[in-house]
Amino acid sequence: DGGITQSPKYLFRKEGQNVTLSCEQNLNHDAMYWYRQDPGQGLRLIYYSQIVNDFQKGDIAEGYSVSREKKESFPLTVTSAQKNPTAFYLCASSIGPGDRVYEQYFGPGTRLTVT
Amino acid sequence: AQSVAQPEDQVNVAEGNPLTVKCTYSVSGNPYLFWYVQYPNRGLQFLLKYITGDNLVKGSYGFEAEFNKSQTSFHLKKPSALVSDSALYFCAILADSSYKLIFGSGTRLLVRP
Image (cartoon, rainbow over all chains, first blue to last red; front, side, top):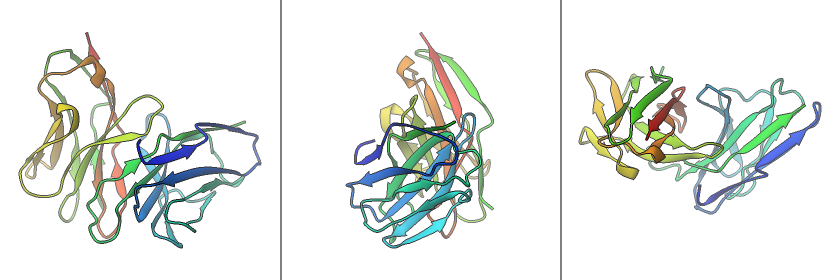
């Protein structure tokens, strides 16, 4: 988990509220990613960003939004449009453009519970 | 389209015995394959990767994986399991023309004392 921080570790929200999950990395990586993990399932990609001020939708982007204003930061907002937001959210980073086979490094995750 | 499958939801092994966690893949071009481990309520930790070269890849914590092109497999192995190896293991493949990792559904490894 070293080099990537996610906060908070646990987050509770009421249905209908937007919530923003923080992800910061000090690895000087260009690429950053957000994944969602549900019990018994693999990780599913929400959004990814290969460079500052640019990002692309992943497989399950509906109901989520991101920004990439700084290289170190890639916050994820879970909006009220996301139908099933309760999940474990993982942020990752990798070296990025130039050699696409670098591994991704993951943060410790944020467990979001919406009631 | 690329995909990866982990056919076993759970693998049980006694401490000291060898372990294998299976992974098969489907890809149209060259496969770039990864193994990650996840401990409860934690992020994923990188174990090893196959890009090219030797079919036997050595990684962290004594794990290794064997790339088999004819069987489209990338099984994770360890000669002698430890109780502390008990965790959730994910196989992943890198999709063409992007940085998208495609993950298998995960295999829970339980090593009993």
